[in-house]
Image (cartoon, rainbow, N blue to C red; front, side, top):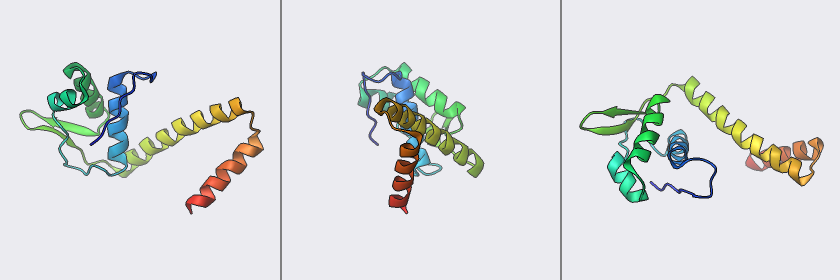
Amino acid sequence: MHIHLSNASDKPIYEQITTQLKEAILANKFQAGDALPSIRALAKDLKISVMTTKRAYADLERDGFIETVAGKGSFVTERNQDFLREELLRLVEEHLQRAVRAAKTAGLSKEEMQELVSLLLEEEI
């Protein structure tokens, strides 16, 4: 598992970890029941504070992505399809908001943006 942390990001480090682990789980890079690295091991690998990784894992647990078993570690949970769809929809909205801001900065019209999205969708089919 590779987690990329950026000091230039506007997101705190724990949130970068949470986001990347959520995306990996949603992309089925982890299956239900898979063990995640221990909080201490991940902190050591990323050269960050144990408190930071603990916060990321706590957020993942709160959001239903992982469960922690005392003395055994943290594991990916079974997710229901409605929850999975809602989380993916949230990610799509977040990415589209960034794309719309960039399009406005570039001076693209609504029609140009719609055409670009249509072309991108056709390429994926």
